Amino acid sequence: MPCCVDAAVESLAALRLMAERDIGAVLVRDGDRIAGVFSERDFARNSARVAQFAVTTPVRDAMTPCDVSVTPAALAHECLQLMSAHQLRYLPVEEAGQFVAMLSLDDLLNEIVAHQQSVLKAIQLDQQILFLRGTYSC
Image (tube, rainbow, N blue to C red):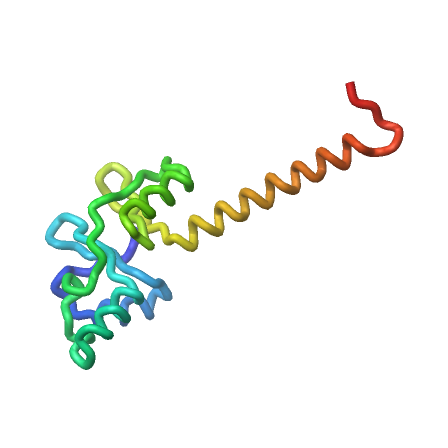
């Protein structure tokens, strides 16, 4: 389960939780629903706006609203399209009404690059096999 904080929690408390867990973002709850995502980037942007009071700002005032989620069956390119359309860097993953994970843009890009590299290696191997001396193709 991804880390969650209440919308009324001060930014500093959320940052401490993120530091303890070595994560870059937390889901923000407003009662029983997910209201958004609070990230290091959200804190930095809020700090630029409100200066010295940024650490006492409730996360609801600094978070990125997020009313979309995906299931574990979602494909990486579908997630990227959704994140792009909604300008998100983090995407909650929901299964059977429960939030089970959170994907980051970096997670998805790394997965896509790894997949592309494996496809290229398979193509290179196929080409080597096809063009070996003494072999014939039909």
